[in-house]
Image 1 (cartoon, rainbow, N blue to C red):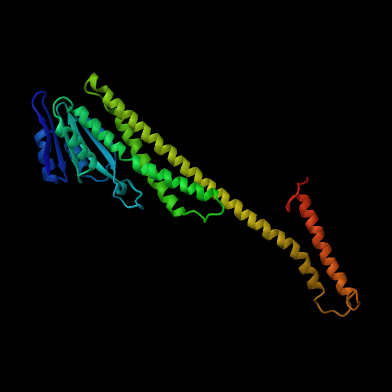
Image 2 (image 1 turned 90 degrees about the vertical axis):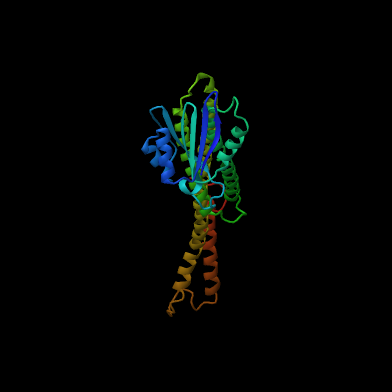
Length: 308
């Protein structure tokens, strides 16, 4: 569907918005305005990441907008974001996208109501960039909340083991967002203001892009650190369990040996037929346990201060 959002005469400016166009519509548009065929092919490719290219007097830009309706398990660029293709030059902006996105709707509402002084290619482009960047604010905030809950679960021994599948999916999603923001930031760096007076618009977009990129980068680093802490604590807890089992084994191994020797049913064994034989063996076993306990305590394995 083709819609002329803005068309002014003095100064001349036109914004055309295409929603879910087919190849014939795009070809007709390219012929009408002289767009390069490779850029038109990029419009039809749903896998394209943010990019910037200038051919002649026309600049072609691809943006990615976070899809608020994506599945919680979605963790790829194509599953979590939607594409907006933008052609622009002096006096003309053409936007192409498959779905009617909220970012474009907001820009249409804003500039459709005021077409006097504010509606220029720079203003429209700045609104689209800022809208695309702001779409990542909510998912990053949500990811930060989930990361905080995971941190509480990792550090609180009274809680059940945290869901590693969920935190892994979160890590992949934040990594995807960081990747998109990095490429968007690269596109912003290459934008050249058509007029010096409009430089503030692009500077605002640049600061916005850098802010979201560093936010995603910091969040991803925090998630990686939490996963590392979880692995380290899990290893520590496993070592503690093995330590307790080893202590029990150290106590029972000599006792099992003594019981095994006196259970071999030989007739002539020391103290076997004496009245004090049974108490003596029990005393020996108790003495062995006490000796092992004192030795472990001296080494610091059962409390106390370890000694070299």
